[in-house]
Amino acid sequence: MRVFYIKLRFALLLVALTVICSLTACAGSPATPNCPDKNRVPQSFSFGTYGENADIEILNVFYGIPNCPANYDSQYALYNGKPMQGTNMGGNHRRAWQLNVKWRVVSTGREYEENIDLRNRLPKDMTDYRLHFSIEAAQLKVYLITPERRPPDKPAIGPIPYQSLKTFIIFP
Image (cartoon, rainbow, N blue to C red):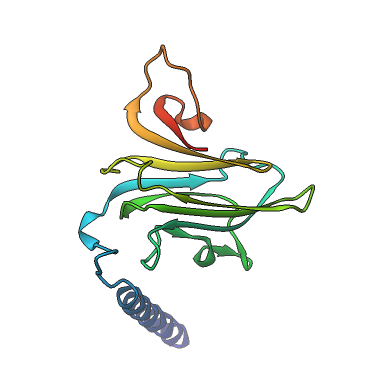
């Protein structure tokens, strides 16, 4: 009987947390002219995967539209109180137009930051596209990976897992 009450309390706690999280998420995403909810499409965002960013500590990443719920914000994706050092996420998101990355080169202790306006660098329709960045010391590289296959006569660029797809360097 005691086990039953423990399971019941646990189930009620999960339901309460789900309701609270749902209400909080809805309250934080108003539909304003800068945050239209109607243009969400399946797309992906990644960094720090596949052994990239050696000797780099990611301090902060924001990918989204300012003053709107972010597609990715490292302040909400923490591990032991620190930003995640990589992500590979997908889902239905708005067409973001700002990427802010702050990082530290571990061996030198120097910090760098790039704030990139992506409005003129991304296609109007981001359906099935991926935005990926990697860092080599002081240099941030941002790739746009299309869903199209790369022609065999074109050189492969970008992250190794996506070299079979058409990829463009959009920054620097």
